[in-house]
Image (cartoon, rainbow, N blue to C red):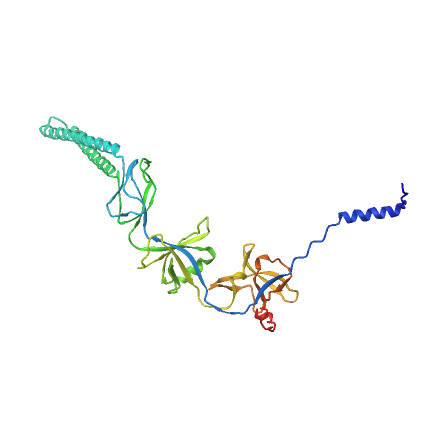
Length: 379
């Protein structure tokens, strides 16, 4: 067996420490790749921005019709989309109990009338007796009071009979006016309480264009109401626009969407219920604004921002901007940028603060002549 050389203790310790440090050391992370980005040097100008909102055509008046009494729904004579006329019967409930109550009320009227007639005859006889001196004046007053009470009971019974007659008539649900059935809320066989919606009817008449506006834009819509032609509508599938008249703005925002519901008068525009539309809000001409492609802006932490390029270090940093609207395929920036700054307009979603980048140079065709370099300010 060959003899191995024996290492000195200090040398052995140094070898062990070196091996341990090399095993525990972490590899340095690879540097981020230098990404190629498109940039644009911003400049101030003027723009005519506009906002667009998804809208829907609705009836000015839409009623939820219901029975005024309790009962079991026997049949429904209309379905979704049916056209109805004023006075048309839409549904019926079981009126058996109502008819019995009406008959009981009629019997009560007959009993009260008989009692009144008897009290009237007694009062007439006691008047003759009092004239002959057989009864006192106090006794005659008691008979007169009994007659008046019987008359009041008869009037009460008649009123109650009229109420029960009306109740029996409420067994039929009748349309208040012409319109279109836009919703069905009950089916035959259901036991309905008074006031439970059965059908919804959009009445014939004016139509509204209904849309929702975010909280930060409600003031612009209100201001547009004072400028003729600022608020327009474009029906689905068409390119032509028609002017709108602002009619109603919700007093409070919707608790779920935090948007305000707005209704605009469609005027004499030929529209159909439920038809989709787009409301266009033209903003006043804005000066000293900056326009960037839509691809240049992004949302970070709930704020709109862009990436600024530092030409000296070729690194990027975020900058928060204020968007004033849209002008075609471009975004109108009203704050946060200054003319002369270089902004990344493509590849914004893969960048991080302080990242090294390089300007993108389009590839040149093999047989194309060489072109001089374009300054950064023109990109």
